Image 1: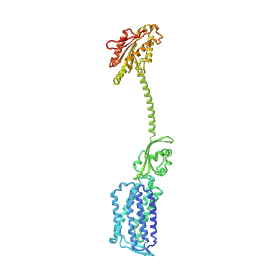
Image 2: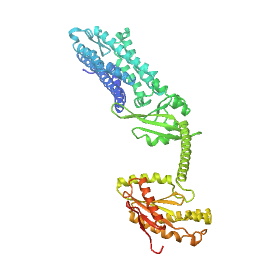
Image 3: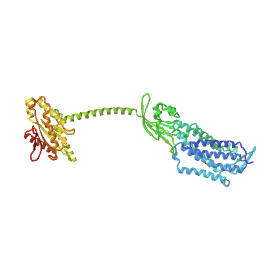
Image 4: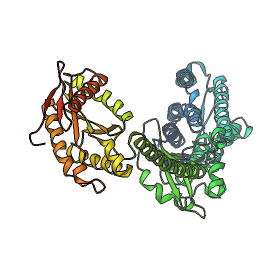
Length: 549
């Protein structure tokens, strides 16, 4: 009979089964930091416990030695994967360099080589014997030099992992601190196995190596952190002093929308303590604005402003950022917010002040336009004055030169206007000037410009109009003027109009020359007997008088 159900094999079989269950649980969360390392660690523990169970169930020396040597394949995985897991969950991945990984393979490779060649040197264990007590076979052997070296190596690696876990314990938030504490407790358990192996009791019970059992117990605590405390579901992000000292509120959520971390600024704004908030669902803590932020949670990254309904309405500058693992999978979200209520109030006050300023500027512009209009108008006739004429004519002639079109100028004067003033009074003279201004406005185009040039003299500027057409317009005014109603002037004493007409560029290339030519034509009309229109010519003005006038 080569297989016997040994009492010592049962704990190791149970250890292998438990480790397998833990491995499955870990694999489901393999995207989390440290999950892959812990999974490989559990695989090694499954193999180690399983081969130990097979060794104790064997009844021959050869079989027990075979399973003992084979168990080394699982055992050598444990230290390297444990230190890797410890560095990852304690956020010390920077130490996992390629050279460190190379160094971590040296001792396991050496152990395997020496274990499988032990018969030639006995550095791992001395000559082994199979003792049978009460029908149960047990392997008895004495440790060699490499056994103690290997034990020291395990002690150093496990102690280093515990050191990094312990350091991270004080850098993490409240909820993650409990999780790290659970992992740390599990990591300390294997130290008892090392102490047990160097004790005299280890020899008395047939060198029963309980390390796989204790590592399984550690795995049980890891399983507790995984399934109950959701260790690998939560991300220790906001544990640095920088985040803790930030004046902006910082809240970290896991995929289940539980609060993983919250800094003092966020606690103060929400009116809670970290102990009250950590581990709670977002809707329990973010009362009043959790629903407002809900549309942003499924987006990649959001920066926005929101209003929060509280006793006093508050405004927040809000940033929601997804937290990604190395495989670019979302593992949680971080909210960073700042109270901008004061800024919003200032912006509102500034906006109101700006609106008032705009209203005042509009009023000023209106007043400026009115003043400009008043400065450009003759107060009696409401026609443009000579100052405006000078400015406008310069611009119009410059445009005419660029676009090559004519500009005609009509200069008109009221004949014997002084007699109207002397006979009927200045009021009658003012009425005559106003009536003529109204007549001119009725007989010119919208873009023609009529100006009171001075006294009873007027100027009409007509862009895009030939001198012949300007003459026809002047004649229309001349014929219409005697027909207007002048209550203060008797019909037989009504004045007439004389017109002088000149056109750019034929009679002048600038405003001064053009006005001078029109003035000379008006002078010719006056000298020719008044009540007529004259077009300027260089040789002599041509006079035309309508028959019967």
